[in-house]
Image 1 (tube, helix red, strand yellow):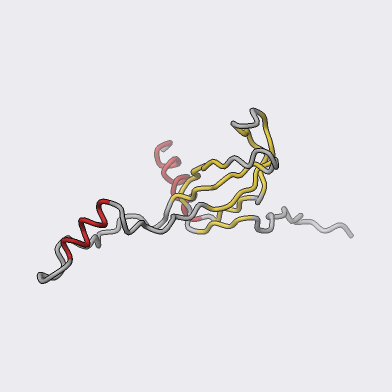
Image 2 (image 1 turned 30 degrees about the vertical axis):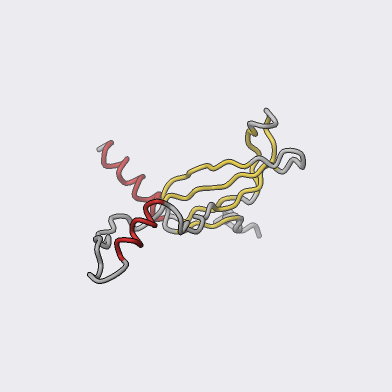
Length: 123
């Protein structure tokens, strides 16, 4: 029964929307103390044309003979792990670090907070 509950919790994490505030007070390694950090979502950079694998692939692809390497089509996951980029707001510091959080279908940065609505209205 406990295993089922844990599986259920993991499943719910993937379904619900995750809302993260745009600023977070957390430890800065450079300042050696807790500081406010600006939070943004990490984005992958553009692939380099001069990486060894890309050069080898382009060389193999050139000329006659069609597609030489298999194109990956068996994607297993429906979500990606969210990575936050934390930047210290101290003007002299500005150090950046990454923080990975769990998988989720819907990710929101600095959205409206959910308010608890009272069921009984006062008259």
